[in-house]
Image 1 (tube, each protein chain N blue to C red):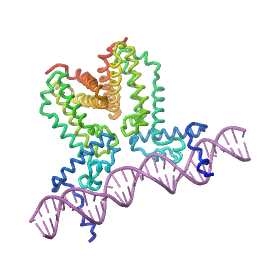
Image 2 (cartoon, chains in turn blue, cyan, brown, green):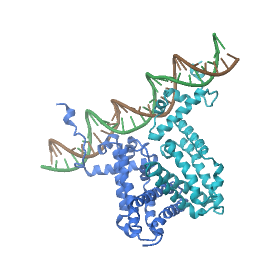
Image 3 (spheres, rainbow over the protein chains, first blue to last red):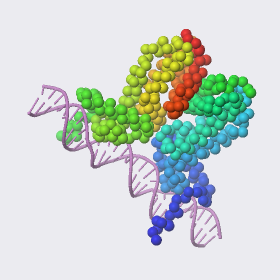
Image 4 (spheres, helix red, strand yellow):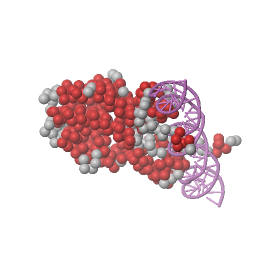
Length: 215
Length: 215
DNA sequence: GCAGAATGCGAGTAGTCGCTCGTATTTTTC
DNA sequence: GAAAAATACGAGCGACTACTCGCATTCTGC
């Protein structure tokens, strides 16, 4: 018998029996990856750099992730969980009935805070060099934003035609994302003013569609 | 004497006496680079790929460009020339006095056309993986947009405080750039509707600052 | 307490990248 | 027509990449 054919447990595909130590390592690796991505972007980050930053060997890294894409995918998943935990969907319906400016405050501020606290998040979303597999992982993140806006439309402008509604949500998210990046890029001094501009811009776009007042 | 010290003409830094053949090659290379950047982005494009696409050897490529960044910089320069030629600054002042929606038509449509015709342009601008040297080359492109908006502010809202004016221009360009990318990403069927949304969004942001009517 | 699984290591593999070098060919200059 | 400059080539260098392999160590279930 060739030792190759039976010696190696043909690469685990499951969390068959992960020890706590392993879960800890995974968290370490994701932390390190988030830092690296935040600093130089996904493409420019080497797997060895992630391993070094996590304080482990390259080999150990591949004990827990199949490849570089897999790390990005896992990180994206974690970000989704974090984002949803940060301010749950539960209040979305209530928030959607507030006056427009108040509503924007309630939605925008936590997301800005989240992005300030997690620089790797934008890096992962913005880098166009990521392989298609990873892009797939980004879609849920985009979707989270879209449903948020869609709930608002559902409450405030239920008469809106479905395709206008969808396009409106896409555009609002697009404006939001672009200005969010500018907020993050701005110095701490400029930041509050940029956040105000962000709200003005999104509010200005959404206003004609959903109305300015409470519903 | 070591042949190294005097044999090689220590790498030309000037167009000392470029032959027409050389200028033609440069154009070929830039065309090839634009295609490649448009398809996979700057970082993912290899210099050998550019050379192959241009139908020349890697060595010949480096006869005309010092390095990969140099190619991107030259391409950015060319784009600036093209963009300014496409619809010269000359009419900016006249356009700035039009009613807002008309003004947007006059500004937005040519830029959308330009970007549809030059896919490499956005790729070069959007890729965050480009080295700082190349980012420097992108700044003039950004500046071109900014002065455009600033001219409009100068004509339509001269009373605006300088920092509000600057921020307004930055934000307007940011919104514009983001939605432009969405326009380009949209299928040909969706495109006109997305262009309309782009104008609504930018107009909605600019309106409160500069007024809706002609001046 | 022991078999086997999970975790850990880090030199090593194959491949790609940007770029160079020696040399050959074409064009300009005189 | 000959010297010199510009253009052209393409194998290949060194650095870096994602990832592997054989093997050592630590933990878990029984």
